[in-house]
Amino acid sequence: MTSTPDRQHALELVNEARAAGARLKSACAELGIGVNTYRRWSRDREDKRPAAERPAPAHALSEAERQAILDACHRPDFASLPPAQIVTRLLDEEGTYIASESSFYRVLRAANEQHHRGRAAPPRAPSPPPRHVADGPNQVWTYDVTYLPTHVRGVFLYLYLVIDVFSRKIVGAEAFDAENATNSSRVVERAVLREQCAHQPLILHADNGSPMKGSALRVTLERLGITPSHSRPRVSNDNAFSEALFRTCKYRPDYPAEGFDSLQEARLWVHGFVQWYNHQHRHSAIRFVTPAQRHQGLDAAILAQRATLYEQARQRHPRRWSRHTRNWDPIFLVWLNPDRQDPGGSSTLAAQKAA
Image 1 (cartoon, rainbow, N blue to C red):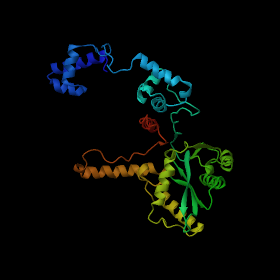
Image 2: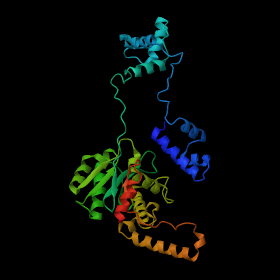
Image 3: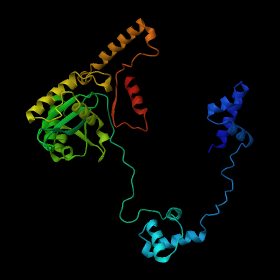
Image 4: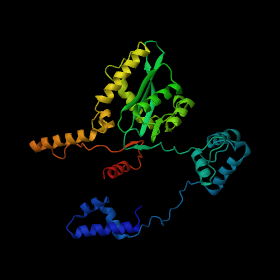
């Protein structure tokens, strides 16, 4: 309901617009109200609905019937039963009908007696996902493992991939014939040594699988000064970067969907995929530069050159652009699981970074 001050303010705006020559219907449409609403508000400046008398429906439950419902629910033999069971038992055992199941629930809620019964825990709101932000390479990594098929049905190889969130560069990749925390430790340690980022502020985000939380990996992360981060249980979207990378990997034209012959063949294919992805693939989320270019800090110069070429093309044929040219501004911040309730948060931080 619209408050009285808001009503008066809306009437003043409409009257001011009409005095300036606007039509009543157009002025009301700008405020999102109808002409009849304006006339009713002009007639009755205050909302009388809250104080209006509302007679009880003729078929409403009486106080005696409400008390009969509560008395039935308080009976020792019915204390642990839901209303559906109570209503049917009253019908079968006593030939009594007091009210419907929904009425039972309404009366119990009004009496503050509708709660979880038994040992079941009450429902809880889902916890927020872990959120991390990176403004440079080797600050936030995500990590996951996926299956690689073989020619033997039911036998799989395991692809370990570690990706840098900021640049999308694959910093660690290897195939194994087993999935465990020891192999995870090897991949992460080799990635850190290759990137030379040991004992620097680095977050490694993964899901809740045992290879990602095993003692061997935890010891390695602690020794290298890496902060572990984990997704919420049974929520794959918390590790979206790795999931998207797996999709790109398995939809490559040369991906052997029928399976690999051996572990050595799988490792050779993975090496070729990583070289293509890091050095040839123009990633759409980072303004179509390669992950290696962004990881090395070369993307700003490349994007500036593209912006210049676009502007020159626009000057040659201005009628081909109805608005601005394509946005080639560098992306300064990358979020892992950004806050959807604050969509402007990341852009605000980006503006601060640019300043």
